[in-house]
Amino acid sequence: MTTTSTESWLKRKARIRKKVFGSPERPRLTVYKSLKHTYAQVIDDFSGETLASASDLDKSLREALKGQKFKKTEVASKVGALLAQRCLEKQIKSVVFDRNGYPYHGRVSAIADAARKAGLEF
Image 1 (cartoon, one colour):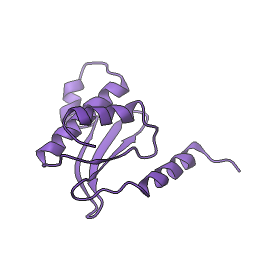
Image 2 (cartoon, helix red, strand yellow):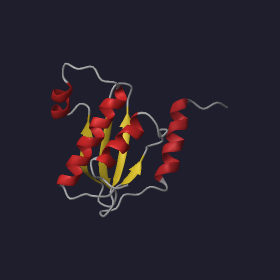
Image 3 (cartoon, helix red, strand yellow):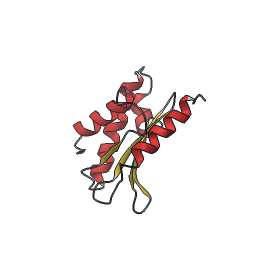
Image 4 (spheres, one colour):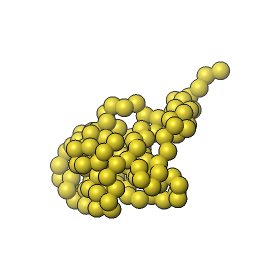
């Protein structure tokens, strides 16, 4: 019996989510990436609320990137910096990182590194 790549990703995602849990003191920063776009959000798992979010589809980020050609990892680092800025505005200083079943390289590590540089603690 063979498994598809989507099934494998969902298994990895479930295995990670068993261990990673966001609390009000340290919410969970989760990353999702499609073929074109990158999304990140900070979630309090106790209340089930999204506290902050950012993506490359945000108006402020799209205007800053308009007319320029960036690689996906460069755009992802800008998403991470924007998310960290929004978290710090809401007094969120430390988070738990959830890579959502993706390998920790490329866009996923770019978001994490940019968020750390902008002041979030992991």
